[in-house]
Length: 109
Length: 117
Image 1 (tube, rainbow over the protein chains, first blue to last red):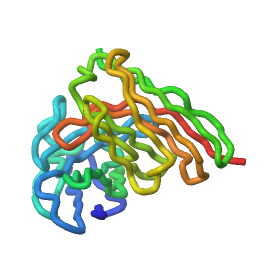
Image 2: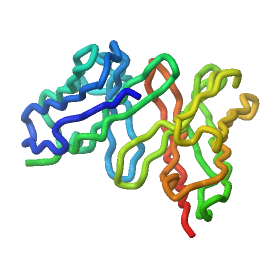
Image 3: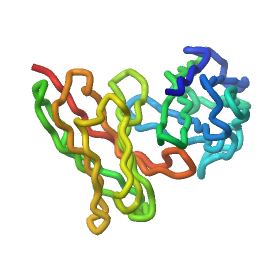
């Protein structure tokens, strides 16, 4: 099973500043990596797929990068609505399997 | 309008059964793989099972193999999860999700399953 490890567990950033969230896979997942945002009481929302492609409706301040085992989600200038929990997720072709990281909580500094 | 509406959750004793349903609309249901993803309240996400467009392929996370069965009815645009031999550790919010680009692009609001004596 591929294990996804996110860091840090909690990130404190001031509005307007940049946030960088990391996700590491225990083995290569190529570019089969997605990022989600989850706010309290809501379902997760897809932000990025294919490691770097923004999903429909994702603001341009969100960008994803990386391939293989190391991935990054960057939020260029934090808005109040961006404070949430972020999850990475990988897809393995065979056997078909999706696994998520444990999440990074982005909080207001 | 896109909608995924789960139902069927509730309180059940260990060893019991539940059948979850998901009614979809606005997502071209029959054209996509569909999954169930669960989340223990306050904790992380876990993919549970998925199936392809015609139901010929089904896959499960190891912890539910032999106990859970995923199915779908494309004519009714509905997805199902039959859960048998439920365990305390199956307690979670269960989401119905559409798969696209090796990710999950549409999510329902979830239905809560509580396994407790």
